[in-house]
Image 1 (cartoon, one colour):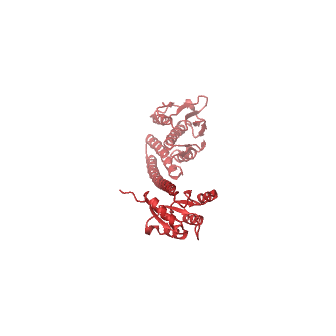
Image 2: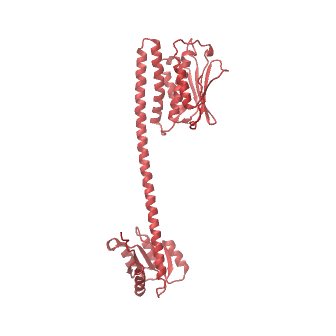
Image 3: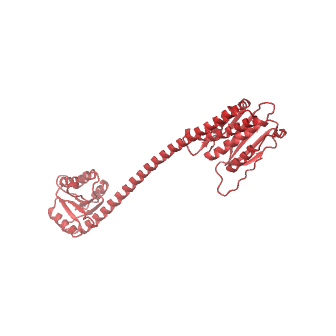
Length: 367
């Protein structure tokens, strides 16, 4: 494809010098258009779309009517104005500084013999390259802004979809938990009732995470103190809620990712339910849940003041709760220990605030 011949607008009231510029630059591959005054040059630039674009302007300083600096100021106010090379016969450097500050791309001193024309060609080439680089920079910045806008729109859409997914999942899990509750209420056998109630608590623990994510500003984390507070409130309203009037929570506002929050919730559900069943054979008693930070680690404890090691083994127990706690502790890469100094039962889990690095072996050990 043939490259378009660049057009230079030469604004100068000296017609003879304009003809020298025309001949000199035409030989160098330019099309030269002459304007004899600043007003004529401005009009030519403004109607460039109809008569062919102006790629670069060479502007003389001393002219009748608008002088070069006044003309330069008005050229710079035209949208998408071509670059301007300021040309003058004056040796006064302050004119050059003023012209460059006003927006001129370059500056050179002319002579009446036309010896400056090779320098004008070099200056025009430099101005064109500078203008091309500026256009490329502006186009790149515009594309970056457009990409950011597209990314922001996609991120907002993704967040909306995630909220909707969490909302639907949370609702579905809540329906399952409600059905399990109804089934437990109508069950005739105590073993079936207990199994359904346990299953309901586990489902509710997961549902609470999805409800938290649906209403939270941050879809990537769950605030544990708020989550555990809602989870324990669900447990109070469970089938054995009359025995949980002294269930308490002390937790710091610690944020972790949703998957690990689910594991924490299921562990709390299992250990609290275990304390409800076995810690106080003669009735209800206090059960404390505590979550604190310790450097980069988190400590989760579930404590009761019940019979402790003196509890009689329940022949109906399947050990499912212990297996679930061990599995969730492994997911958290948590250690699980019983406090031997506590008269009742105190189970303490220690796990990192952040997920363990890939390849690290779990230190979880179910009691």
